[in-house]
Length: 271
Ligand SMILES: Nc1ncnc2c1ncn2[C@@H]1O[C@H](COP(=O)(O)OP(=O)(O)O)[C@@H](O)[C@H]1O
Ligand SMILES: [Mg+2]
Image 1 (cartoon, protein in one colour):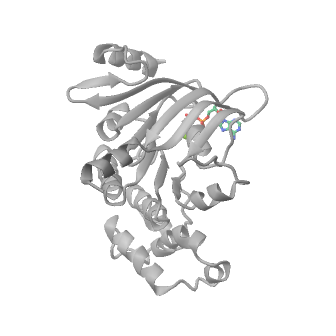
Image 2 (cartoon, helix red, strand yellow):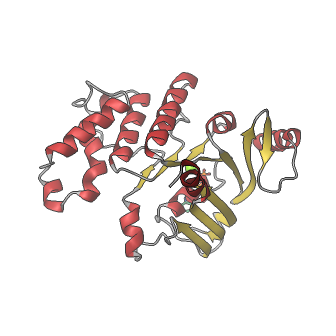
């Protein structure tokens, strides 16, 4: 296989496809309505929108925690559903970092990271914390990658906000993921630390051909790192944009200019 054909294979493979997806938490209101989106393997996709617009719900649909009431979702051509055996196997390859991070406070950085390996270890092994040495070495390697060497034995509650995020990323990478879903992972961090974390994810992404789908608060940051940014408002995807050269391009309709997009977004963000 030539380099160019393998490139086109990767760049055209749709790892996530949503077709007219709606979902709700109760019978009255839609949390998401008529969502269409398509994400290429290996890319960095961002979701931005006001609080309550449906960003977290969108991630939950992608990892099978929620199911659509209407429309279809395919994750690597599988329907995310706990009854679908093929998806259950795939689910282990989806690293999900909730906004709360989901760390266990009173266990160590290394033990929190090992949680990412649990799906591939036997129940008995996991229960006895009788982890194979190569898995422990792998966790240590990943902790070095995320900049936490020397802090393996520290309890999670002792860490700074930036360090906690590094542990959550390490736990996700320990899954050997193909997809990383991160919900506002840098929202509460200062400008410098947020970029350190984003650079870390970008590096891991390149090394592992990972598809990252990240919910962001900050449009600037989303545009800086993502190939495409979906803007969600009141449960609907209102824009899909990205930076090409000096302009912001409208991928959804192809009709809007950079100025119109900026104007539209600033109007949205004031509401
Ligand atoms: N567990 C839940 N039960 C009922 N409604 C919910 C629940 N979680 C979210 N919602 C509602 O769904 C909508 C989208 O929420 P969410 O996806 O959390 O938005 P965002 O992440 O953009 O802030 C909101 O109206 C929210 O109130
Ligand atoms: Mg949310």
